[in-house]
Length: 434
Ligand code: UDX
Image (cartoon, rainbow, N blue to C red; front, top):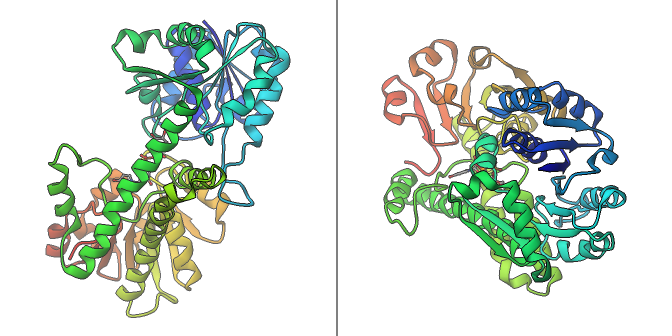
């Protein structure tokens, strides 16, 4: 099938490559010439495990192209919209200017019967607003949300856990026919496929992210209680998780969630609920956000306490700057935020990360970075782990003890072996653990 993907960021680049890998003929379009050049050369412009392999192998078949010229989408039967919907600079709502621009760019190239399938996370009602413009060309409009996680994006795209097709009831049969052809492999593998109206499909994505954010903030709220009550939130989560109705996943307390999705999606969702006159329905998400942001402050307070009331002039090794491991993404990263706050309090922060330093440097050039974990740890008065990369989880407390000056480690992700660190003479400080 001939497919176009408009927008080649974390979502679109992976989608384009994965669709070509599945046998389709794909053109990915982006306004960023540098990004397009990288992708065309088989080089991911960001770190995503497995993406380079797929770009190279799909590229070698000649089925995958990238272009800055939107006219190159002509001839595709399905056009995926995969542009970003960042938080607006003027409020909590989503900035839909990229979606609007992408649709405007597509319009002259659409033929009757073509399908425009939105993948971007948008406020409910966006597809209805776009419908008139798209349908004026004789094309169809569907919303087909993507649930990929950074770090697992290729696999999540090739083997999704569910497919959601949002369509206008009058167009549903055609939409299902076209999208079933796109996702023929996943359908054959028995992937659940739900056909909904446009608003439901838009909501599935926002609701899923709101639920995940709520689950994380719930356990972080329990961590706050555990901290004053002398309980251990990791044991609490383990015990809760055995209840199949609750489940253990996304119950890891720590410095909280970040990234390009959860924080801005819950804010856009509350803003949209206000517009719809149902602000009260999602008011709890404001609390979810507040709990999440308090965890960053908590780590900073722990650092101040650990250093006797002030971090001024003290060397603090910050392990991790990305919002989670296996990603180079520092958007709304709790780890980077903690580093910046400590620096603001006068600490001599040395931050390290296996993949995120370039992006972190671009955002916060005032911090000192090193790619060498040892260098970050050398003479550190305090060690703060804020992104649970494997190499930090596996640090040897004795070896770290040889390098660092201080003997306190703050485990902002509750991933270290507390007993082993204590046995090696460290003061271990976890999140919501005695
Ligand atoms: C998320 C959704 O999971 C995905 O389905 C959607 O398509 C996009 O948004 P992603 O942003 O890649 O994906 O990250 P995710 O793995 O969900 O983690 C989000 C944040 O929550 C990270 O900062 C992570 O460290 C944090 N987290 C996750 C916790 O603090 N505790 C947990 O138990 C789980």
